[in-house]
Image (cartoon, rainbow, N blue to C red):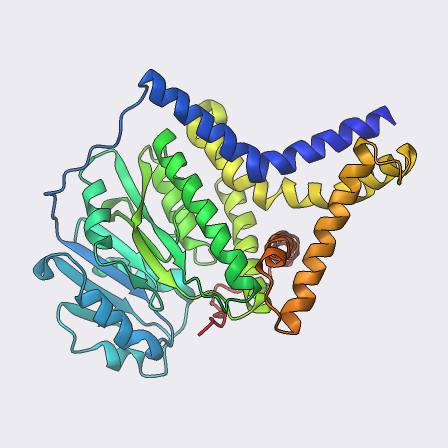
Length: 396
């Protein structure tokens, strides 16, 4: 039984560290560094205004073209220094024709559909500016987003800048909206602390930028292009910085079923990324970057979901051995797990009958996140995940 207790506390430690402990440790390290005045803030030259390219890889996005271009033309950056490139490979809904005619905008189209990364690899051949900014067609950018991103590149050590993904927060949001919104707010906080310590570990594909010279063609079967591209920049010795006021905003997934579809793909891509970026697991070579990468990303995509599964039988054995109704330490921890999963179940039931209780949507969303990792793992192992996006429906 002592061995089982050691297993239990090891499993619990990994879970708590992954979702709460790393954030607490990160905050503590940063506070100590601030007090001791260790490290320097990334210097920003607000007068830095190089020519840049806004790169949009799109597949059948005709419903978003007008809004995207209206938003783009209203961005606070010199119009003669902002080039817009659309790569619309495979689009057959008229997207390329709708984009043509806008100022400083070029369209590169192929009839064949080779996935987003194929479009990015091909489209980067047409980018001649020192900085390229990637954005999705269905997201709108904050007015100062381009300027704020570019300002960070005035520091030569910065190779990539990640913007913030914001989810529209509506009172009518279903579980996907409530859970996704809270998740991204927490992620935003961790990214700010990661950047202050050393580097963000991965950029959000909705809005991120790199120095064009640092772009390396990515394997054509890559699932998480944004993650691989940004981490390889960090692997080359540059930092990934983050500005939460440079943001892309989009609506949440229409429902949890749609969100699960999206997250399974991301999870399969996450496992693929861990394999391809295995060199970053070498703490002796990459130091702080490895510590951040393992703590913030690798555990979520590998060990932690397995630990959550194993905790159920392990804690139940310990609870029954202690006395399931005696409410000792192990029985209390067991019942807290039961309460959490019951909350997730009720979140699912309430969503299906359109009753909105956001408090219950949080455990439901957390459960879906970890379920997607398990399903994503099997999809990755079976090699059944296509590089072509199957777009999740968004809430209106």
